[in-house]
Image (cartoon, rainbow over all chains, first blue to last red):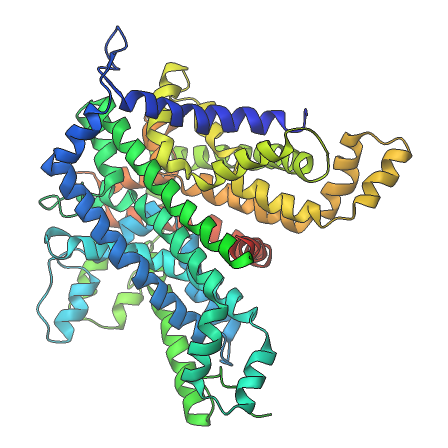
Length: 278
Length: 285
C-alpha cells in the first residue's frame, strides 16, 4: 500500500478535491465573502445559460471545435497516408512534420503572433503574390481561424504520428486479398483502410476534442478574447470571470459545465470501444 | 513485386509526385521554426525589413549577432529559464518515482480495492489537468502554496498517462520473476527496485518524457500560481516579453529558441520511446 500512497494522495488532493470544490461552489453565491456564501441551487447555471455573453462563448467554442477537430483529422490523415509511402528520406520528413510538437504552446503563440503582424511574413508573401494584405488577428472574421492554424501547426504532427501507427497496424494480408479481387486505391481505402483505422480515428477525435476545448494560451496572449468576443473561448472566459471580474462562483460554474462536457465526450469514447469488443 | 492497392505511388511519375508533396509538407511544418531560429540571430528591425520585398534574405541573417541571447540571459528571462529547468528536473525525478511505484502496485501487487484505485487513476488521466487548474489554484492560495516551487511542481508529479504507460509495461514482465525473488526472501521494494525498474528503461523514458513535456510547456498553471518575479517560469516570461510596450522581436525569437531547443533535442534523442508509449495508448486507448 505504501507504493500507492504518494500517487493516491496527489490524485485526491489535486483532482478530486478541486472537482468537488468546483461542484459545491457552482451551487453557491458569495463564496469569496467571509461567511463562505450561501447555497442557491442551480441559480448560477440558470443565470449563465440565460446570459447572452456566455451564449456567445459557447457558440464561439462550438464553432472552434467544429472547425479544428475535423480539419486536423483530415489533414493528419492525408499526411499519414503520404508518410507511409516509399519516400526518399522518409524518416527525416516524419521528423520535420513532428518537430513542432516540441515547441511549447507559448512559443508557438508568440512566433505565430509575429507572423500574423500587419507587416509580417504572411502578408509579405501575399504582397509578393500580388494579393491584398490581411488583418488576421485584428479581424472578427479571421482571428479565430488564425488561432486554429497556429494550434494546428503543433496538433497535426502529433495526431499524424498516431495515424501512421494505426495504418501500419493494418494486416498486409487484407490488401493482398484486395489486390487479388482487383480493388484499386479508393476501393481499398474505403473498404479496408478506413474501417480498420476506426479505433485510431475515434481516439484522435476524442483526444483532440478534449485538448481543443481547453485551448487557452493563444487567446490569453494574442487576442484576450477579441476582437468583439470572436475568440472568447470557454477556458479564457472562465479564467477571466474568476480573476478579472472576481466572480468565483460564476467561474466555478463554468468549470462544472466544462467538466460535464469532458466526461460526456470520454463516456462516448468508452461506449464506442466497449461496443466493438462484443 | 507489384504494389498493393494501399500504395499511392504505383508508377514512377506518381512516386515522384508523392515524394515532392511529402517533402513540401515536411518543409512547411519546419519553416516557422527555421524563421524563428534565423530571427534570433538578428535585430527585430532586420527581421521585418528583410521581408519586403520577399526574398531569400528572409532566411539568411545579413549581420549575424548573439546580442539577443546576451540580453536575454543577463535579464529576468535567464532566471525564468533556470526556474523552468529546476521545476522540470524535480518533476521528472520525483514524478517518475511516484508514478512507477503506483504502476508497480497496480500491476504486480494483489490487494483489495485495486480495481477502484485503478479507476481513480484512469479518471484522473481522462480529466485533463487544465480543466480543474482554476479551482485548484484557489485551493493552493489557501494552502499557502502560491509562488513557491512546491506549488509549481506538485501538479506535475502524479500523471495518469505516465502511470498507465508504466503499468502496461510492468504487466508484460513475467510475474514468475517476482515470485522467484520473493521466495528467495527479497522484499517487494527489492523486487521493484532491482527487477522491475532495470527492465523498464524504455517505459521510464517514455513516461519521463510525458512528465517533462507537461511541466516544461505548462502555461496556465504557472500563470495562476507563479506570478512573483522570482518564481516566473520560461513560458510566462516569454509571453511577458511580447506584451511589453516596446517589443524586442529579436529577444522574443531568442527566448523561443531557448524554450524549444531543450524539448527538441530530447525529442529527437528519445523519439523511439516516446512514440512507442504513444502508440500503446492510441491503440489500446
